[in-house]
Length: 117
Image: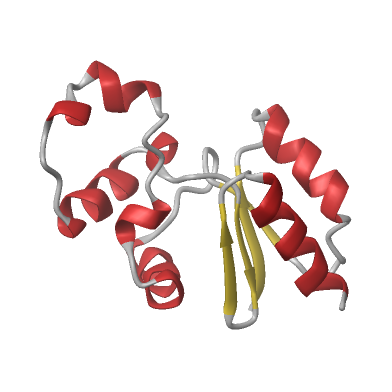
């Protein structure tokens, strides 16, 4: 599977997608208009082996709800990601059996290398 989960209103996601130059074979899923399903989240978990790795701790709702002061378990992270799109760290790029999560320079560079090699 070749897929990217992103947010169309996110300038960082747009910049990364342009920088990586995603081939047309990639499926693009805007998580705001097409929310991630439980099945899709399970697929991402199988690749990353962690819901916490997929979770965006920079989300405004994370602080607003006081979740930053709670001890969250893996199941809590999964529930929150399914509940609201802002809790999924973006972008998430799946290149066959590889997963690249987030927008760090290192992650973006690794994704670009893997996709174009």
